[in-house]
Image 1 (cartoon, rainbow, N blue to C red):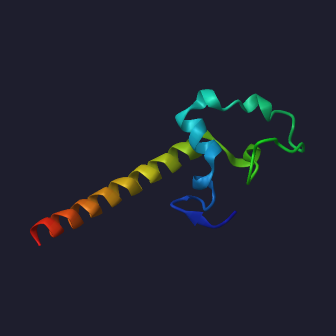
Image 2 (cartoon, rainbow, N blue to C red):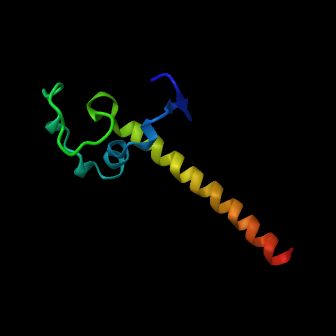
Length: 86
Protein backbone atom coordinates (compact mmCIF):
# COMPACT_ATOMS: atom_id res chain seq x y z
CA UNK A 1 0.00 0.00 0.00
CA UNK A 2 1.93 3.01 -1.14
CA UNK A 3 -0.88 5.40 -2.01
CA UNK A 4 -1.72 7.69 0.87
CA UNK A 5 -4.64 9.86 1.83
CA UNK A 6 -4.02 12.43 4.58
CA UNK A 7 -0.92 10.57 5.71
CA UNK A 8 -2.68 7.21 6.00
CA UNK A 9 -2.72 4.37 3.49
CA UNK A 10 -5.61 5.21 1.19
CA UNK A 11 -8.05 2.50 2.27
CA UNK A 12 -7.36 2.48 6.03
CA UNK A 13 -9.63 5.41 7.01
CA UNK A 14 -12.54 3.49 5.53
CA UNK A 15 -12.07 0.39 7.63
CA UNK A 16 -14.56 -0.17 10.42
CA UNK A 17 -12.24 -2.15 12.72
CA UNK A 18 -9.90 0.81 13.22
CA UNK A 19 -12.67 3.25 14.05
CA UNK A 20 -14.54 0.86 16.32
CA UNK A 21 -11.31 -0.09 18.09
CA UNK A 22 -10.67 3.60 18.81
CA UNK A 23 -14.24 4.57 19.73
CA UNK A 24 -15.35 1.38 21.47
CA UNK A 25 -12.32 -0.75 22.38
CA UNK A 26 -14.61 -2.96 24.47
CA UNK A 27 -16.20 -4.14 21.22
CA UNK A 28 -12.95 -5.37 19.62
CA UNK A 29 -11.52 -8.66 20.87
CA UNK A 30 -8.07 -9.04 19.34
CA UNK A 31 -7.61 -12.40 21.07
CA UNK A 32 -9.78 -13.86 18.32
CA UNK A 33 -6.97 -13.08 15.83
CA UNK A 34 -4.00 -14.44 17.78
CA UNK A 35 -2.16 -17.37 16.20
CA UNK A 36 -4.68 -17.58 13.36
CA UNK A 37 -2.82 -15.71 10.65
CA UNK A 38 -3.81 -18.04 7.83
CA UNK A 39 -7.37 -18.95 8.83
CA UNK A 40 -10.17 -16.99 7.20
CA UNK A 41 -12.02 -14.70 9.59
CA UNK A 42 -15.76 -15.11 9.86
CA UNK A 43 -17.71 -11.85 9.71
CA UNK A 44 -14.82 -9.77 8.40
CA UNK A 45 -15.37 -8.30 4.97
CA UNK A 46 -12.69 -6.56 2.97
CA UNK A 47 -9.08 -6.28 4.03
CA UNK A 48 -7.89 -8.53 6.84
CA UNK A 49 -7.49 -6.37 9.98
CA UNK A 50 -4.79 -8.64 11.41
CA UNK A 51 -2.18 -6.92 9.23
CA UNK A 52 -2.82 -3.22 9.76
CA UNK A 53 -5.67 -2.39 12.13
CA UNK A 54 -4.81 -0.31 15.19
CA UNK A 55 -6.28 2.11 17.70
CA UNK A 56 -3.93 4.83 16.43
CA UNK A 57 -5.14 4.48 12.85
CA UNK A 58 -8.71 4.59 14.15
CA UNK A 59 -7.95 7.80 16.04
CA UNK A 60 -6.47 9.43 12.94
CA UNK A 61 -9.40 8.32 10.81
CA UNK A 62 -11.94 9.67 13.33
CA UNK A 63 -10.08 12.98 13.54
CA UNK A 64 -10.18 13.26 9.74
CA UNK A 65 -13.91 12.56 9.73
CA UNK A 66 -14.56 15.21 12.39
CA UNK A 67 -12.38 17.79 10.60
CA UNK A 68 -14.29 17.13 7.39
CA UNK A 69 -17.61 17.54 9.18
CA UNK A 70 -16.48 20.82 10.74
CA UNK A 71 -15.34 22.13 7.34
CA UNK A 72 -18.63 21.12 5.73
CA UNK A 73 -20.66 22.69 8.55
CA UNK A 74 -18.73 25.95 8.19
CA UNK A 75 -19.28 25.96 4.42
CA UNK A 76 -22.99 25.27 4.81
CA UNK A 77 -23.26 28.02 7.43
CA UNK A 78 -21.72 30.51 5.01
CA UNK A 79 -24.09 29.41 2.25
CA UNK A 80 -27.02 29.78 4.64
CA UNK A 81 -25.90 33.27 5.66
CA UNK A 82 -25.50 34.30 2.02
CA UNK A 83 -28.96 33.02 1.18
CA UNK A 84 -30.45 34.81 4.18
CA UNK A 85 -28.79 38.15 3.47
CA UNK A 86 -28.13 37.78 -0.26
